[in-house]
Image 1: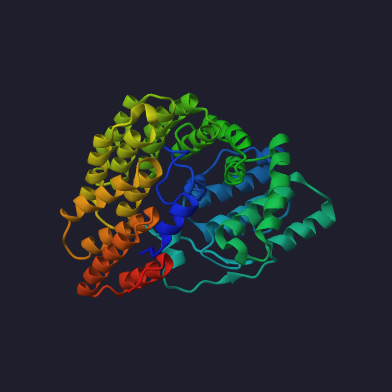
Image 2: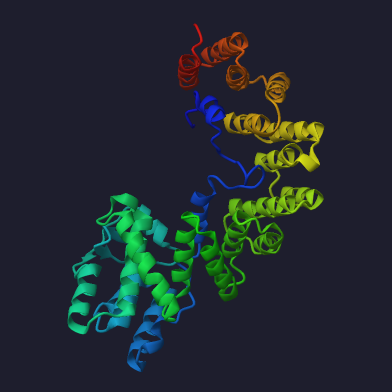
Length: 435
């Protein structure tokens, strides 16, 4: 459970966006890029379109094809053995792909172990389960690449292999690897555009670079790459979703509707990602001024995602945050429905925050008070009073803030909820309330 003590209070003072918030008052923006990093990598292990091997001779192509056939059969130990000789730049490129994508275990991405999988066995099973593997004592990828360059000179294929290797290590190890994220990103952003311009790249290169641009808020260049990716694989929902995001950030709301529809039509395997597609479609409609279609998109999502409170929160937000679509009664109804699906600290927090962002403190107070009467089990009264105390403190009403906090503590003591009692203690210290 997140540590909420004082968090809402601080957010209210400084206006920081949190959790399920939206683009400039409606659509998801803040907090979205972390999700995008996951979405962008969702197809990382699929067999991908490539033109990296266009310059390879016939024998090399046969080796690469044989390796791919073994990968298709999940015979990864056999696959790495085929390309382990690293006899030329193309085989080296394939070898590093097998190392980084199909290893069973690795030591800091410098030494690798592999396994030919059994029927119904997955790499996830192997990597997270128990078992012993024989590490292959070959030179590290960096050493292999360095040695090739010393003997044969610079090569865009070798540069690209190194960039892919570094980027994969960054995704897996973050700032705990042998090179810093800044070093890796500087190199990758130098090599990837050159490879793309030279026509020596694969789908994952476009995907990786697009993800980097998106996280750096370089939305124009990210849009160009995601647009290209959707032409390569028009069934990949994550490409359509991320393309929509780039358009939303650039206020291209009408264009975003079309790409968001494609994201809905091509769902991700993860159902939460598919829900995100409906949400961003609604956002695109809303920011285009078509509130009726925005609400319809949310209602359509409920046919598949009946128990998702965020859908009702978004519906409430439609009637709270857009001045041409204000209807406080409908907003209240939808926020209350959100609690009927899930009544916990996150949902309460999000609804209160939306009231404070787009409505009034009194609306947030009324929300807590009326729902406190409906949800009386376990620590629910304590949660409502906890957030109610913060709203009162935000308005400067310290008398009622302390009364609400007293009630919250009373409930949490009854429930023997030490974590929330600690939250109350911290909040009391932050708002300067007397015990």
